[in-house]
Length: 305
Image (cartoon, rainbow, N blue to C red; front, side):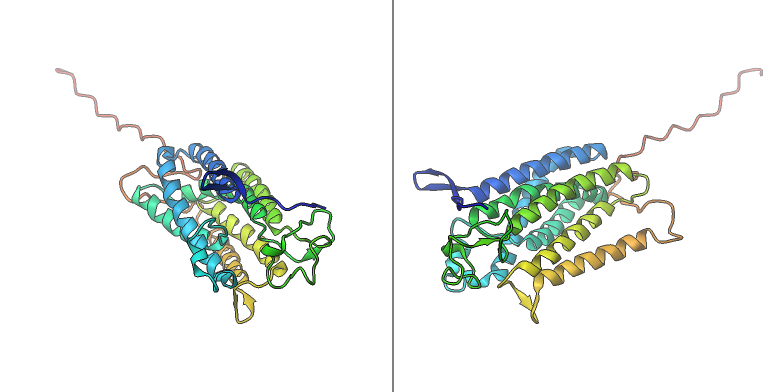
């Protein structure tokens, strides 16, 4: 078992603190950008639009994720609301980031007159890549952990970072280790990224534009639904963890859409994803079709023929 707690600050430069949480988020964003760019090029999409789009969506996701986290963990902020906006800005709710980031991403893609569903398939593996790396920021912040465990990969949590359900009086620091839920989500993100990249290549002829994003919602929702059973003191709705309700909606909604798109008797033609102007339409992989050959002109009759 791990027998130390990590520092939250990576570098201290005078009054400026560089936190591991921010570093993990930045590294996750960089990996996500690399994965998305590769998938976008394979689909023939306009990769030059990606950097600005990622900045816009990343900011939106941070704001949405922060709002969700504050509501979810209100017991950490109700006595000192200034902690919501003051450094180190730790804590982001994944569903808040996913929901707000998705909405802003769709609006940005449509604003740039790009095919939304083709971009959704390119972005889906990148979301998993982001999760795989960024979740390690939770390790350095000593958050996103579950109940006490005797498993060999259990982690210690300082008394100052404990939720009320696990006080040090009842769970001594020297003797207690906790389930590393951040690690489970990180591993899920790595496996999910590899799975989506494989699916996009192995079953390209059978997939419709946007299917990979739906698979992401089902995968992430299922993992999150299961892990919520190990969490305490979270936002609930009539006694049910709100994250489980959102997870259930993501899972059922995505399964329903997939089933409808691939139902028996559905048209063989893949779901269209037209740009909003006269941009060229895309095929199943998102790549634009080759230009049509010009119609031959009738031969001029020769004089005296």
